Image (cartoon, rainbow, N blue to C red; front, side, top):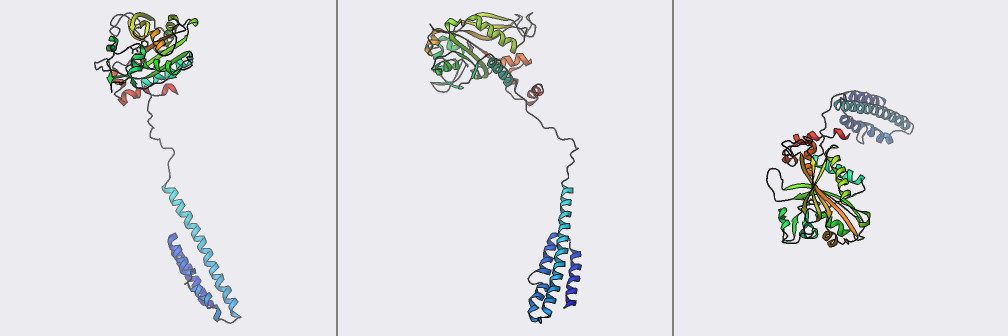
Length: 349
Ligand code: PHE
């Protein structure tokens, strides 16, 4: 018996040395210690031994079994450590290697201007409001003192979707919306920026562009006057175009304001001396503005005897062109990455 056990032990040792991986170890474990192993058979055969021999042999078998188990556990541990090391070696990352630069997008010049406009007016106590691009004839024209058949409708060629709906030609539609939605008829100070659409296709006009609209309404006795409009636009233009800009108010016509003005700004390129950009006049037309027409106040629920207001509007695309010296309007919507990447975010960090 003893010899047999010694033989099993030495054979186990030999086989253990040959083992290469965990799978082989597992197989050997079954072979040496499993139910059908020689050791198990010996334990099963203990019954046939005398009572005297039984514990002795039993002890010996268990001893050998324990030894095999222990050396197997050791081998397993070693192999696991080795395979982990191997894996770590394989997946090693050199953290000192230079990385590929992450490309970041840039803020579109139009959006930069929009954000600056909103910041400026919010700092003066205005609300930023929004309105639909698919607008009704009612809000885009009728409630702005432009009934059907009014000749001034021809000032803006529109994209009609149905008889009732069109793509808004001006953010002025939001003037009427804001007045009407304000059921308390409390004072209004709002700016609205957004897309507008007209059927134009010449070199300096796009069928889609962006406008900003401003509207202030307050009690008449608080003197909401042309002076306030002038002061507001002066702050606006100096901030958006240049601190040295001068403003000039020229009488004009819009159906929803009375009196109405076109507001010119000294040419930012020549400083007012005259150059090709300003067609040698020294002035560039920038804004439309005026005092809110009493009809418009009335139609949208404000008593013109009690309230007065001013409104203004301008094209954001043109502001962006002035500001960044962009010479072709098409750059603003053809999304050429080379062009856009000039407006990276360095100055925002
Ligand atoms: N909506 C006018 C335009 O598109 C501009 C404007 C706005 C004029 C507000 C007066 C008051 O030309």
